[in-house]
Length: 170
Image 1: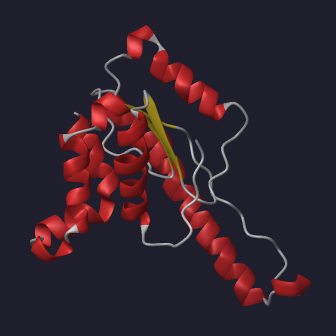
Image 2: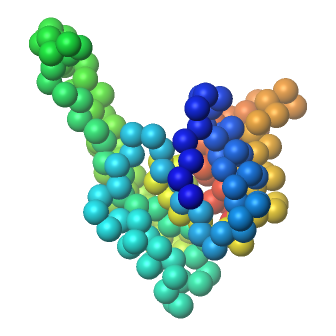
């Protein structure tokens, strides 16, 4: 099933709509999340599914594909050329995100994998076993929706709710 949410109520609300709506009703084996603007490369969804389905990976609760940063076009609106400052800002943002993703993917995640646990799977492109996340992991994940009862520490923790999901799977 493919579903697009019409109104933007925030990322966590989209996850709640997907997990508590579709997944609870259909009881899938695997759940995949792809953010708007994420473009999976050819066969990447099949490769993630194949990885998760290997007998040696039955204890794996989730996996993620490598994500890339989209480089903005050189033209502005209506085909106009952006001024030099716009080009600089766009390119600087692109390089900053690119370096952050690459460091995270090749250094942080590789190091964490040595210990058998990745602290965060990017919500932009990840896959989970439904059996691994339904129940308590999702309840903790969605606890971030009730901002009124959060202590400052909890509020900080739920800024990266993807991290909560990984910890709960463990």
